[in-house]
Figure 1 (cartoon, rainbow, N blue to C red):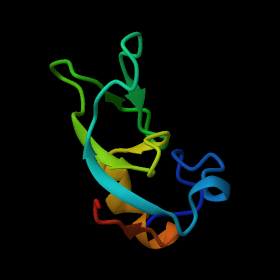
Figure 2 (figure 1 turned 180 degrees about the horizontal axis):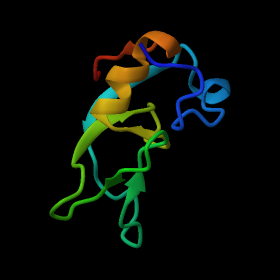
Figure 3 (figure 1 turned 60 degrees about the vertical axis):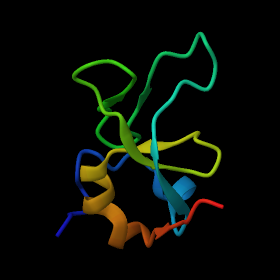
Figure 4 (figure 1 turned 90 degrees about the horizontal axis):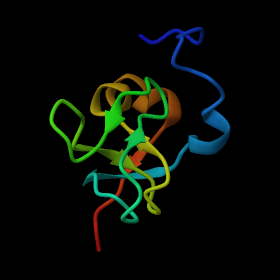
Length: 85
């Protein structure tokens, strides 16, 4: 069970509580964009070796969540996994 004083919790509940998330492969939204970070643990998403290549994201791909943090916080945040249209 995740404690509410987990170091990864920094106010994300306001933005992410009960959101629908999508499991996707990371890709740069623009040519000059080279990475994103997990909004909880700060692990790096990028198209580079030794980085995360897939994770959970909001519909607009603005927020990325690594699979480990997704599993740790899915109950607390009451996330729903969406199906791509």
